[in-house]
Amino acid sequence: MNDNQIWERKEYYRHRRVALFQGNSLNENLFDKEFIDLIVTSPPYNVGIDYNSNDDTMNYEQYLEFTRQWITNCYKWSKPEARFLLNCPLDKNKGGHKSVGADITTIAQQVGWKYHATIVWNEGNISRRTAWGSWLSASAPYVIAPVELIVIFYKDSWKKTGGSKVSDISKDEFMAWTNGVWVFTGESKKRIGHPAPFPRELPRRCIKLFSYVNDLVFDPFCGSGTTLIESVVNNRRAIGVEIDEQYCEIAKKRVVEEVNSFNFEAVTRVKEDPVPYLMEEDKL
Image (cartoon, rainbow, N blue to C red):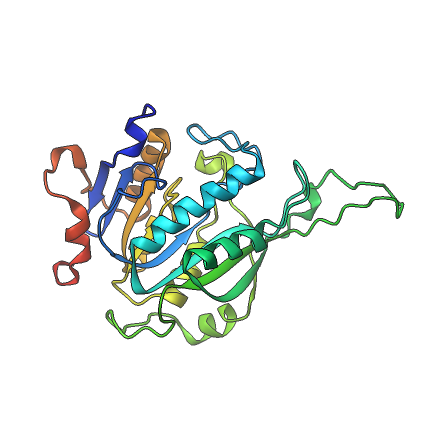
């Protein structure tokens, strides 16, 4: 997409329970209705990752404004009882030490989201660190935590009163996942073909713990399609937005392969808008 096209919403593909759009989540006019039950996403971290279509080297003030824009849009597109699960860094030291998680949490609350809790995701990847600051000295040591955050917000009301009211989580899953420290490994960039994929376990837990069967799950930074995959295989509806055409294609192929369904239609051959269709629960 060129600079003008990134502000448009291009229907990339869809199936009966899922739709993917190529577009930019900074565009406040991307959608014009409240349709989201649950957001599960991991936005760019602004740590110099080589994305095809996103500048991951903004200064920190620019990054926070970028964050405010897309979080505001998601708020506008969400139902009153929507939940928002945001995977983000705890902090960062590249380009200066910044309290990223705390700053993003503050922005989300300023936009209107209400804070509920934070899950700490322990990836256990401390072995890859290369920066120690002052080695074996109190002069200026670096402290690096091998964790990320999953910050939990909601829009107006935490208690869900709408939807199917059908939960599909087991007793063991519920007891384990309501513990606020999650331990599982990350995903392989090489295996997925995307520079920053997150593992399927992350959206799987978020979706089963915080949404009902048939709820509509949204990912504004769809990347390689992991949130869409876990939504579909767990009997939710899903809409994703991804700015890059190559990543859209990766997401499409992964969804088709993982859910073992080869009935996807190229949306360019379908005239009707899939968003209202996916919003109508009785059609699914």
